[in-house]
Image 1 (cartoon, rainbow, N blue to C red):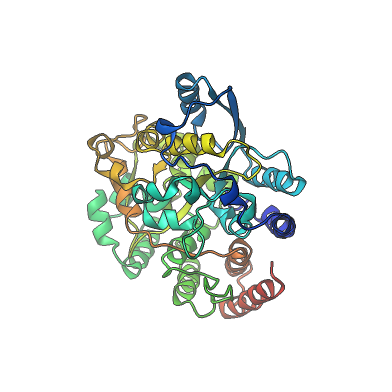
Image 2: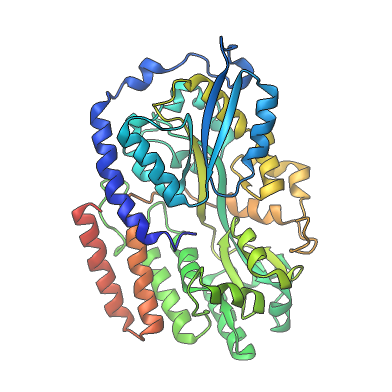
Length: 448
């Protein structure tokens, strides 16, 4: 999902910055306060509207929100919500860009994916400050790091309410690791691989014993270490400067992936390729370090392996990839009603429902203590009888707040390409690293 949009994302980045900057210039910084309603308590305390209101809601991907919207509409005949869903996330955000640039056509509620967050945070004049609508009263319900992702640096502006998150875990084939002599149960395997050094030793041993790969792709292996950085990855939160060459975790992720390539224990197929999907079903690799939402991808790619997969913790921590927020564009004439709807939409009850129906992992940690959540077993039997929610929850609570910056994806693509050169062209790793650093600095210098 992330890989195929890279090139389009670069084009969007340039256009988005230009267009949002232009729009920001047209609107005053205090406009949010001028239009802010006084009610702050969501649907339960929304004053009855004088006439029927229709709210447009642009959603992204397969999230099952239509069912929840039907429930809302049945209970709120005077505030009806109409869903418009887009599967392609680049097109989804481009449509919003077009509406902002034109000054009309934006929905009342817009679902914003975390990968696009920094660009929209740079143009908050185009959105209502949810703190003015009552978001501060809801803040304590959500994971702190997740909340911060949609906040201004000083926390005074809240762009969106959190939906799901993507904590990273280690998916693994129980039968394959057991046959290779590794612990088959999740706790035992996590203990055996609790450092990246132990992980590499086990991976090499697995490859030498079976002749197969241990990890699914260079991209996900690199991500797993990269996302364990301490608050920043490639860009400084303070001034936006490039710090990837001095961030020890970025260098560790690069060198570790090179080691996997040179020792032959990482599958060479590019992520999202047909070969990668087929390898998942064939059992050509044993483990996949990936976020919660990858569960659906694995099940789709590997239907013949149902019941053989399990989930455990990554070595040395966790990261997060993906997750969205619900925002209210300034073009909405009904921010009070829109806020009532989104605060209901991402409530504890509805996040639990979205997890059960579509495995959208909750951003409300109180859910993790619910017995229904703890006992959740995938009804398809793909993970046997494992209570998988507990593994995702354990990973979610290890995630640190992370600053990405507007050029994160472009820079990350450069380092990923460098690793592909090492893999496919047998390029010299040190030269590839130096060239990647050089290109990344040039991107930051020209601002995109």
